[in-house]
Amino acid sequence: MPGVQSSLNIIHLGPGNVGKAFLRILLEQKKLIQSVFGIKIIVSGIVRSDKYLFSRDGLSDKEIKKVINKDENLRWLNTPGQTHIKQLMRFIPKKSVLLDTSASDKTVDLLIYQLERGGFAVVSNKKTLISELSDRKKFNPFQQSFFYETTVGAGLPVISTVKDMIESGDKIEEIEGCFSGTLGFIFSELEKGSPFSGAVLAAKELGYTEPDPRDDLSGIDVARKALYPEEMKRLSADEFLSQVHRLDSGYKKRLSNALRERKTLRYVAVVTKNKTEVSLKEVQISGDIGSLKGPDNIIKIRSERYKANPMIIKGPGAGIEVTAAGVFADLLKIIRILRA
Ligand SMILES: NC(=O)c1ccc[n+]([C@@H]2O[C@H](COP(=O)([O-])OP(=O)(O)OC[C@H]3O[C@@H](n4cnc5c(N)ncnc54)[C@H](OP(=O)(O)O)[C@@H]3O)[C@@H](O)[C@H]2O)c1
Image (cartoon, rainbow, N blue to C red; front, side):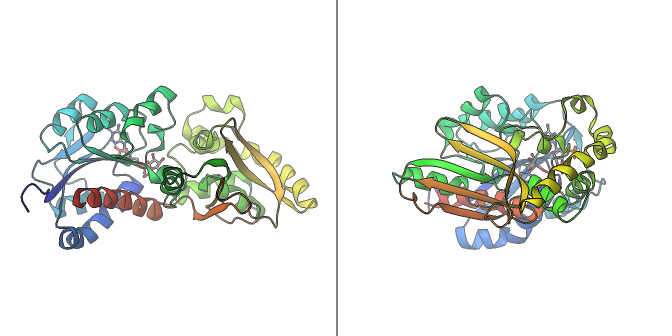
């Protein structure tokens, strides 16, 4: 078909835990994508914090596998910064994808550059959306080309469901729930008898936390209400992890008080048109929020249409594999747009 795009170039920022799992899915699925949609996926660049690989015609599967396997025997080049990445992007078609699975707070300009030139962007990187409100607003004009489903509830379909409800004329009145898989995991480990520090270290080990777990414990993902004292902000991430046991007795006491009333602790967010409230709450252990287990999220959406009975989305809200699959699902949405 003349004029129909038959290939799609990707520049991938951040081949960390989520990024590598994404690349693994991509290698497994790209043949199927080509046969079902007639689109060849070309990974033109992979960018880390200080180095990159680039080939306009696409990195080979062998090179991508080496990235996944952390084989340093690759021709990484030093990155002189974001401006340099912008220059690389000029070598690939505008209708390409900038895919950000990094944990960097410095990618907003690059993403906006890509969107403004008519390209697509996919992010799992929450920092792009929780920095300054002025930065967040820069993404508003690009609702049809910017995909960020995994920034809320990892692989759960939260953003797309809310968007569908709004676009079909429903009016959202309140969204309540536990939006942080990491905090959900930590408080359900506490219930099992783990100390707070042990739960934080286990969450990091399992890949649920951000590289610096204080990004989760600060509550910034969920709109802030820190779970550690102000003075611990000054520590490095490693110092924090070695001192987090100082918080154990406080959480143990608060949990045992709650358990005496058949309650437990959950980090609950309530969002309405006029307010956003986030806090560690004592909730009934048998209720839908109190009975959450591990990294599960629950998102209860009350709207004009779902008034008496809210729409409930529930499932793992953190995890490398589910997040990577969610990123891949966002990529599929772009492929479907190109094929429409
Ligand atoms: N894990 C989850 O359950 C989950 C769920 C939802 C969303 N997320 C989000 O997914 C993102 C990735 O999480 P992760 O667990 O995979 O983190 P990670 O393992 O720490 O990986 C981060 C990657 O980002 C790269 N990076 C850092 N600065 C960069 C920059 N300026 N440009 C390009 N790359 C850069 C790092 O490069 P180096 O290799 O050079 O250090 C590393 O490869 C995070 O933003 C997180 O918020 C994670």
